[in-house]
Image 1 (cartoon, rainbow, N blue to C red):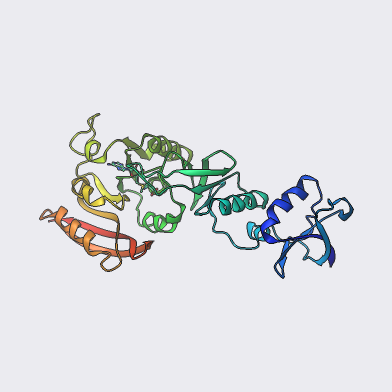
Image 2: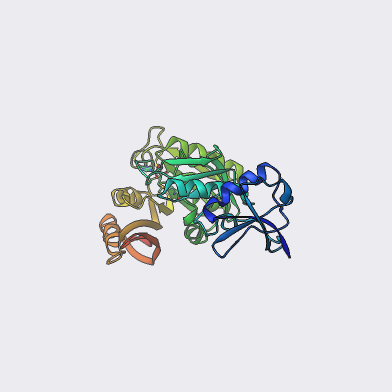
Length: 334
Ligand code: SAM
């Protein structure tokens, strides 16, 4: 059915849509549409449209679905969702702003839009963000039924690893002791505790420890989660500041600090009980993605444990010719 539409170049689409929306002129019953290089914005009252806009009649489809950013922009932007935060990865600031405006104007349940402003950096593996819309960088993200409160300004968290975490979580039995050496806000620890495991999560970042405790509480597993703050090499084995010593305690150890996990394998082996599975994340060249991790595990286990690599898995590509991998290694005391 033909309806009155303001016709503009797609680049001016969001600005136009916003201006018409501010004046209450949009006709939400029809989709904003791109055709023949133009963007058609349906309007409810063409007589009220300011003269500097061109009004035409156009066969706009009746709106049946929610308006997505691509409907407004005329192209599909890459938008990652973390709770009610939309995360962009755009080099061009102006393009990022355009996308942010379209996300906010769409029907997506988003309150904040951020763009990556740095790589993950420092010991805490936190990145900088450009906040393009909204202001709150704390959100609740739900992953496989687990609610995780996270502030992306203060702690590391990546929703991209959800499938991989779930693969590991599903291996956990109810009576296990699990030690996560780099626990963050608890995306391994909390679901593992929900399966009945007794878990310890360690992190150097005090904010991560605060969120880990809160996430254990809000998922009803605080009684099975211990949060340890500090360098795991100092606080987990050999008697930490408060006398903690998890030497020989763990049935399972999670090591998700991919660039530097090697430096922590001695501690992982000290945590291992008579039999223990270590999930070792690593970033390596695609030429030999698993070899360095396997050798490092063998060296750390020395003669004390036999090492059986049960899974060699490429989790995702990380950079050109580099991959993020996981080794599931079973250590059995000799
Ligand atoms: N496992 C979490 C996840 O999947 O979201 C967090 C992983 S993040 C890549 C690594 C975490 O290790 C960060 O939260 C960082 O603060 C912590 N970390 C870095 N060095 C550490 C150390 N020496 N001891 C304990 N935690 C450390």
